[in-house]
Length: 438
Image 1 (cartoon, rainbow, N blue to C red):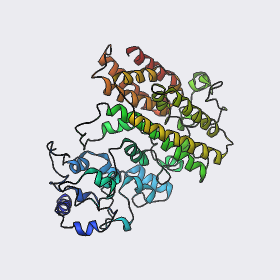
Image 2 (cartoon, rainbow, N blue to C red):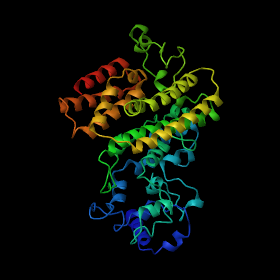
Image 3 (cartoon, rainbow, N blue to C red):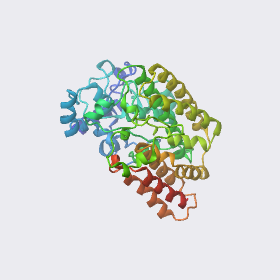
Image 4 (cartoon, helix red, strand yellow):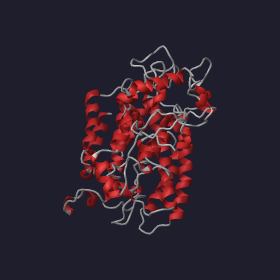
């Protein structure tokens, strides 16, 4: 009944029956039901003769985890345990709804909707639809008009797309998961753009002149934007609020399985003496997982830029990993480095990618023992990147044993089943076995 009702509303919008009232409210939200008509995006079967598949709404509501993001707030962990610990109702708390629903104030709603059970709907990613909803299917209307004149979010732009995804999957000054929420039971956040897109139920078409190396470009640009946004978040945390904010540090430096000293790979490894990542024993280190793969990407493309970014991150690592540190100084350094990461993202968006580069990057990642040494989250980024690179290059690269290589890459993820039991040396050994197969 609910689906039928929202389909009728969506059909009315597509026929412009409610177009006048909606168009008169610039920049307002209509809810996902406005896209659900069979003649719009609510079809069952994809259509390949049109510019869009026209089953986007159906794909979202039946297969996409975003549609169930609100339901997570009623689970035992969130709805009961986190609610009790944090003294809030996750189903009404703005800090929860900001990422688990299309949560906008009443003043930005073209028609009132107070039921957030639809989760993360169309407009969470594509922007408020009021100005283009009733007109964007008319003859002569262009995607560019919707974006540049009517407020549609440009998800075709890789930088903007990564930024939109990371606003929830990493966090920013408005939406974030802090250490208090992690302690209450919220899972830690991690992200890799191409890997997450690969498991997203596809509801879009690539244009006829699509980039043949879009997966490699998505990986590279996504890593640069991830560094930029992580530095922006660091600057935000260092500028105010509780400090240190432990979400900026390596969680598993503290939260790991304890063993006797003679069995501890962490104590055998030491604390980076003589390297850029040297720190005092007992000081939790800055989380480098948002940088380690980007470092390898830039090294394979532009050595000069790599050295500049490296020096900035090294200094930030040193300052954040101190017990007594200068917050304004850290915030300033993070903002400067963020600008550099933004410029790098724009360069990578225009860079040339091919199979040879993808294989070269795989070799660079698998031969670098520094990545496993930075902990579980950095190793996780390496595993996701290698899987994306393998999928993107396997049709054109000549590997010795394709199936053995595929199996070796897949085996990396077993290290993360119990994150606190991660072992640097075991992961490095697995990387070396992949390197030999390349």
